[in-house]
Length: 353
Ligand SMILES: [Zn+2]
Ligand SMILES: [Zn+2]
Image (tube, rainbow, N blue to C red):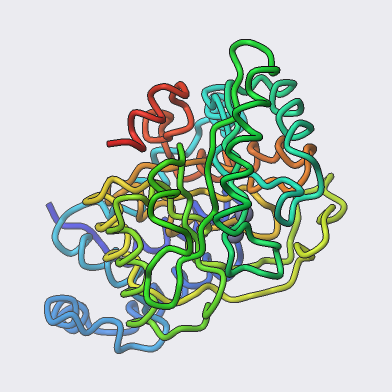
């Protein structure tokens, strides 16, 4: 069966637009469609075969891939994902995901740069109906965020063990860390501690402008580390927009500032996440919205697991999971790919794998 790649690109643009996606994304597909429509069909096919579509201005990796799939007679994966979520009630899908979540795997307390004591975070999580809260304060090198030294983390582990005895039945604080992925891809905490923790989230917080090859290597090294369970906010981007109803960042150090995505080979990174069974975080913070939806779709297609986390620095922010759920629902992420839909026991069994 033959398909018309230009019609497919226009269809994608239309669906993105209807779904109220960012204008630049819509424009990317539409301008690629126009560019290709102006060329002879045979040239488009030849370029697709030779992998030379992206040499045309206005044709990027994503659009080129769609064209190649279309010319091969397949429905482009990107289009298929959009069609799969089209017409479904996104609110209902997002609500279903949110309801399926049993906990949050990325949160901070006043031990690092959060604004509240651990017990307040825990009580808010109980109120939200969570079964667990993973406490992931920062690691030592992130001094601006008062990252925990090995000694302080040991103290925190003792403290959490005592707190857990006093918390309501059916709820517990799981131990964890948001560990910095250092320049060489190693993790910024003692091996023995990383092995002890229930959940290890690893994030890049420095050298965000590393060139593509270096950043990719760095992330691949971290993902191959058996202690890493979840790859936090993988692009490091900061967007300025906030959903209605969110009036401010609510915590110091997280003031919205615009920062471009880090550059890395997403296909290689997501393939490594599948290979090492590392979950990709969908970070719910309004100023992060990380990864962007096109990358969530790619990770989903690659076969990755996800964790829909708030990265809360204050109790009220624990309710931001719905933002992550909306983004996940738009990309068609099913609940069974999301590790924090699991019970604490299953989650720990997975991180100890
Ligand atoms: Zn972070
Ligand atoms: Zn964080």
